[in-house]
Image (cartoon, rainbow, N blue to C red):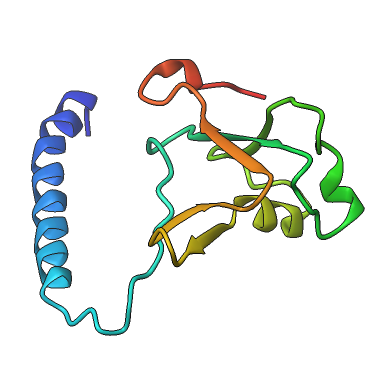
Length: 129
């Protein structure tokens, strides 16, 4: 199939996908929420998403390996969509986790972990490293 034919199919596929999403979303809104709220992790963009983390002195790592970047003030890559997370899944899970604050009724990063999305909404985040 030629590229032009494939591109002509794209709007229809997007329409079907968005319709399915809206139906599922409105159905989910009508469900009983008595069981409580559940956190949702949103990753910016759909490809080449990147999230960086900076570890402050308040961060308490689960292992010495996770403390490599602690207190150096530098941003390091925590998540890159194009590749799997670092080999040490324990550090990744600890630094990427959310903590629920009952008093504020909100979620925030783990203590001592600051995060940011790299070049969100632009093509500058498409790095090959």
